[in-house]
Image 1: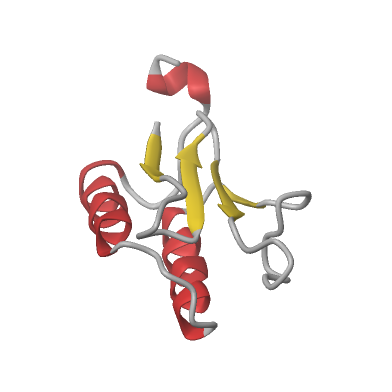
Image 2: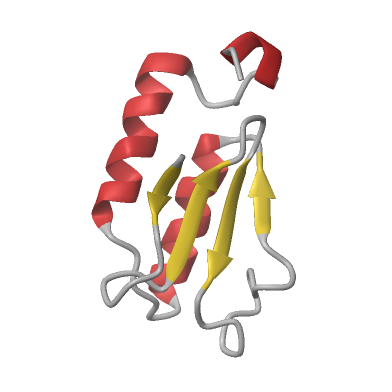
Length: 89
């Protein structure tokens, strides 16, 4: 499931890979945090929110809907993604 995809409105691609979240940056040449060869991975939704904020501080575009969906998931399921088996994946 993707939270946001590369587009004119987003410099990042953020997905739920089942047991962790992944962020890839469209501007791999300019982004030391998660270039296409080295994506940012975390099992913490809160850590992804902090990572998204760092992208914005660097002037990169991340739609607010990504934060909103992640916050909804934190409220419903907690911060840490459970193992894929527990999630039915």
